Image 1 (cartoon, helix red, strand yellow):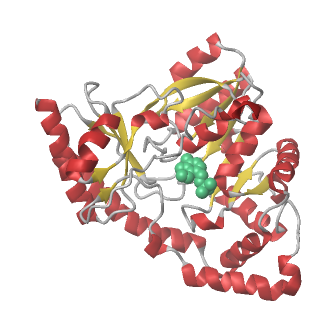
Image 2: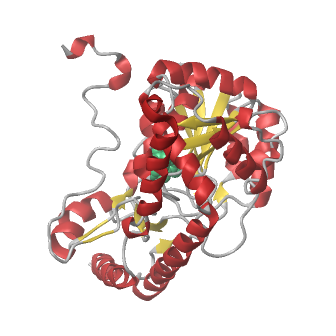
Length: 399
Ligand code: PMP
């Protein structure tokens, strides 16, 4: 019956997210693959209490349908956070929308903006889950390279001049997934100027923004927005727990009105029990104290990664220096195909795994990079795994 499926699913093509993490059952396996937060740092007891309190407050009504918007009080808290932490000075609860994870925010925004064939810009590399969503709307992708200070803004401008039909740009501005880099202040300002000049919308996806281990936070792209062109997206997945499936975005009310229409069509409403629990959690605990605890632990792992890169990576191999987030991006000479290296050598011989670069490019045409996660491993595992990776690469490069 596949002839009955819509064109957009391309049944002959595997999901972009399938098989990203190779299965590896060795006792000494070291996996640099996952984008998952450290489980031992989850505030599990506090969250259990928050769920119990949510159920106690509403009795049987707890389990009833509620609203598409979710609790006003939670949106009020998030608007305050947007004003204070994200410098989105005019954010009101009416500008805040709760979504089923950041992922749903990406999907709804894509659905709002993209007709089949519409022109959009993604970073090269970019977040694979966003590509998985965008693919379903069948856009025409234009890619902008990542530099040490974020997307190549001159390249973007050249693209915009050549393709005035570009209407949408997706960016991970803080601690890029997978690139590890952060968009500079000057580029943030320039990006908004370009959006105004060339008439396009920006989705600023920032699930890692609060996880900064060194240096000072930069104002969000949204904070420079003067025309309602920027949609700011965040998530509780990395700073609390992914299983909450709760994200939030800040946008112009005109944009939100349409996004709610799309959300109703997708899943009717916010998981209101979860939203009430998260609201209780935020009322009774300091999210910032919790984030500070995460950052203390992740800093140790980030330092271990930077040290291991300096110690073990052979000449010709470069890596980004993330100041926060979960990932570093390693570039190897073009003679090495990182997908082949993973399946033929890294996994079977060295018992290490990473995510090869081709997954993170719209056209899957870059084969000499890899994404390494450092937050899910101990410093000893990072050192050991990077030593194995360095040995493997050095061996390959001298062959
Ligand atoms: N955006 C980026 C850049 C991500 O890395 C992730 C999770 N890996 C998401 C969005 C979506 O996460 P969630 O739906 O759990 O909020």
